[in-house]
Length: 473
Image 1: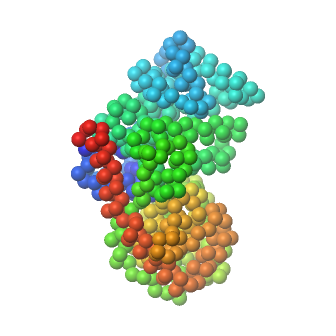
Image 2: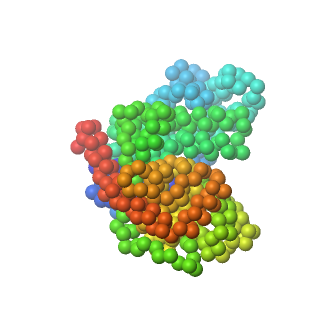
Image 3: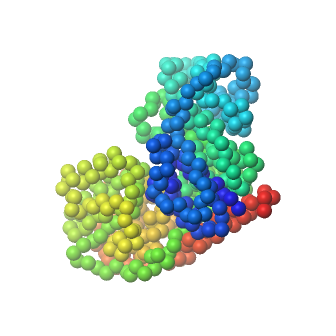
């Protein structure tokens, strides 16, 4: 069986939860051949992998979005070159309405339309003028033109790519990766499986609501565009998996059909953390850890401000921030806050390290994300017997406070609330007995529900069932 896994901005270029999950899943299915189809931002990243690929990865197909900016046009299309069905599909894409993706797939796969040629054509200008007059009558046409061009050029470039050969296609998000999975299903007739670790559309919506680079009038257009990509993936996928029931409900609200949906929780190699002993009280240090890639969506600044406030009560506390840098500019901002406040000795950025070794040292961990799925960092913390304070996003509440007979394994606070987070840090930091009890509860929960064996078996079963139902076996 050959599975093509499709990634956007993650594996194998950067470390993080999705990348770690993908690497482990591929490695733990050694009898399955994997082909990687990877979408990156910049051509300069070609071949610059952060992982040594497992031996069962037979090929890597890379495509970079900035390549679309260097496309040159060779001819101009007239309106007569497109059918009404094709014009309607393009027009609906431009205004982010219900899109007939199969028509667009055929247009860019069979007619081999060059997106650069389309952008200088009469059909593109004519459709945009009509849509601008209809939906944005009080907006400068030039602003609308360049906004739509920025939105649609990458996706039109992507759906013109050659599809790698495989028996199954498995995307780990909607968005651009989900569109490529849909394209593969349309072109090959092979099954397309979709896994969402977070709800991609909601994450993009949160980013766009805060973005200061776009014209405010077009904020909704950008957001609606990503919803059209989700619709594309949900409609073409044979199975749609989520990490927990709450995420599955959101997928259904957005458009996923219930009969396609599955819940497959994350799992970890809990045996890696079994040797870690319970943490004994240390009068000289309360060690707090944050295992997190450095990115704005992780909201490290709230964590830092909260720790600085809590440290006034917990004078021996130290915060260790472990993880790769996803956003160098944001890392510099965080480091500057720490240094200007005089906390460089109490807040340490370690970079990439052996997490299990640091977990031996930690008393508890923190996660302050604005958006999450089912964080592997929490599962690893619990497997090591270390409670966690996390924001009330994604599956964090379920992991820490589930009513499953195992008890409370941490604390939940609202996102972006430094004051309440500081109070939680003081409470947990000042009560070693509570930390021990929570740590035991978390370890028991991981052993029952979140093992790697359980997760890998679920994905193997999904692959085999899709393969057999398609008549490929």
